[in-house]
Image: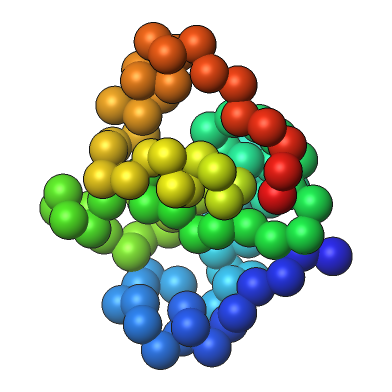
Length: 101
């Protein structure tokens, strides 16, 4: 079972979704796997990070189409890069993300 804190989501995000279940349903409808990291594809064993495809610092939003499941390593490595920038960088450094989540 994946762990998450619904309290932090409800208190800190101005969203177009009312609950994590809404987000999970959106991911399911758009073939985004909740149990895998959106970026590296590794299985999320114990937890997932709600990751912004376009960071809030780069005009991103908290809308469902900008939030994806991520492993801790990818979330940390991505930083303020956009999805495209991160995937390009990840490919250029030929790095494999260890399945450490």
